[in-house]
Image 1 (tube, rainbow, N blue to C red):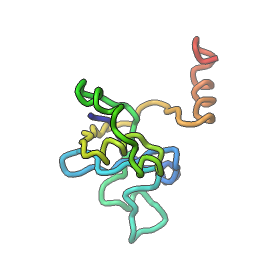
Image 2 (image 1 turned 60 degrees about the horizontal axis):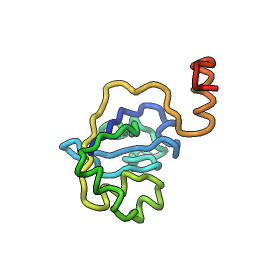
Image 3 (image 1 turned 180 degrees about the vertical axis):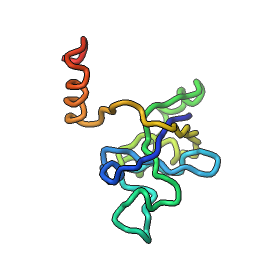
Length: 132
């Protein structure tokens, strides 16, 4: 399985629970996903993303699957971490599977994670077909 992420520079975005964060290992594989600000800059405090050794990453919510994994995934039990965070990718990690993370140099366009985001997207497309 693989997914994408990009660096977070904005403190409000870093603190926002609707923005899913991901921490990766040295090989670019996901270690953990959270709605909380991770990694937390303990010594700097206050959740300043500029205070981390490497920029925190926002998960983009785009997935790529191999066919064999996609066939196994529905049979995997939900994990306790998935239940707490409400993030299905934690089920994958809980069961020992890997998620490769591509870190993009630039953020994607507007994301739609909340009703307010949907209203904003509708304003941006200005009544384009399918966005009524």
